[in-house]
Amino acid sequence: MKSKISIQIHAIFYISIGLLFSCEKNSQKDSNSYLNEKKHFHSKLIKKEKAPQEYQQLVNTEDLLKVEYPSNRMKLQGLIVKKNIDSTKRKPILVYLHGGFALGEQDLLDCQVFTEQGYIVFAPSYRGENGNDGNFELFQGEVDDAKEAIKWIAKQPFADSTKIYVFGHSIGGGISSMLSLEKNVPIAKSGSSGGLYTPDFYGWEEIIPFDNKDPLEGKMRVLLENIPSMQTKHYAFVGKEDEGLYYLKDGLDARSYNSKLEIIYIDGDHFTSLEPSMKKFIDIINDKKK
Image (cartoon, one colour):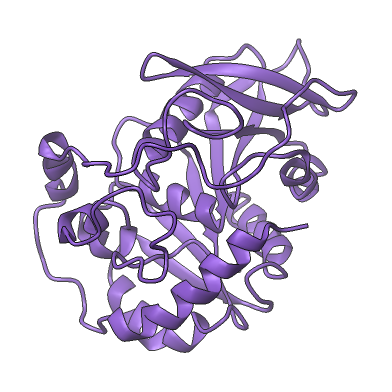
């Protein structure tokens, strides 16, 4: 069951995105501009709170292994699906970045598409979530946490570090898309479902932890404002019934034209498009035609 806050956020977001979206093609600029800005950017949190979603404690189960990974001097929790782990072989890894603001067992169940294909699935939680240290930042520190989670899993003895794939849904899709702006992260390919956002965050006032009047705060949190700075290719799946996002197809296509962002339209809404998006992403990993 998806959380009410996740559904409400996306309903509000896609109403507001139509007022904000620019159909201009990307301007030419330094491909390192985002990373250069990030070096000097320090988000000013006006609220220091935990992630805005209830959660259940993460525990070891018959099918799931609870782990901890380090990020910014914090120990953060994650879950690994035990299926496909073989101590005698290194296997491809699928890092799944969950939707909403808490990690749960259902997120791993959603990844059955990947486990059936032999991938070892690892899903991290982030700062401020699931009882973790730190505070909710919304597409800032969480991106750094995801980056560190990927580096951590790549070092595990069962992982083939040349075959680390990343896929995120919803909020996790936004985080996955932001990773395409980073360097030195061992990602072979990344994708997202319903994970494209704009910098305004109109309607999110109850949960926004930063000063939304500062345009730089929003800009540094979304891929669509930084496409020319992408370091790696990213596959963004958009459901054709995704609460209005599909109807911005022309604008999305203009923004992504001649860039490392490839937008793929697929049947389904924000939630029902997830599984077919995962299957298409597997085809891309395997170099099959879309």
